[in-house]
Length: 212
Image 1: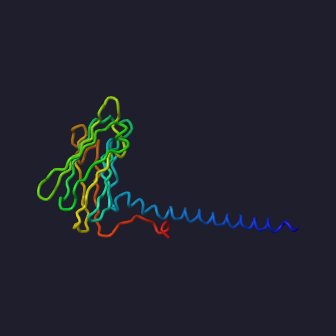
Image 2: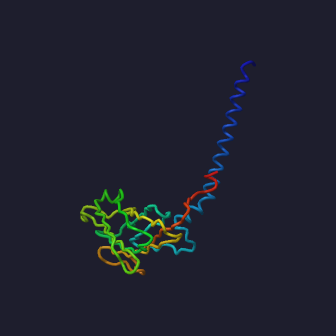
Image 3: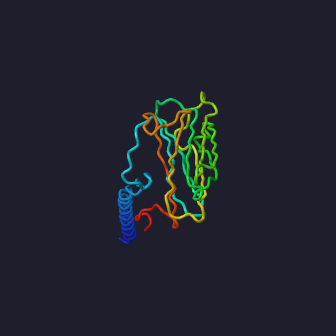
């Protein structure tokens, strides 16, 4: 009888710990399902009513990013090739933007590009009016011995002007796959535009349940 109390205490601790764990799991599951609409909206760039992606062999995508005046922003460039689609040797993309708001900094190849020995280059030129034009080239060093990567192929860095007002700078690129321009109604390829959302205050993607 004298030894029963430690066991009773241990049993109580185990029951209490089990109850806390169960509550934590339930709250985590609740948070997961409640936060899915928020995360899904951010993946779509926060745009409601956006048309669903078409089922094409190739897709060129520019990221949707947030930035503040006087800072740098990084934008992902992605290329998707469906299984069974022919290989690609070269991709060229061109995008224009206000030169009073954004300034091209640099481009960096992604891990998949390095694995495939994809040559990644970019050059900013003066466009019409108050716009600059960024020309990007992605070319396989050995098209016969490697496949064009499917996934993130590069990251582009821009500097946001210190006096930039709150706004959204659209990135509506043109693209050429093996020197053939991707037209808006192309049944084989599509382009998903991006943007830079500039705000004086930081924009944080979070969910109440994960921040309280």
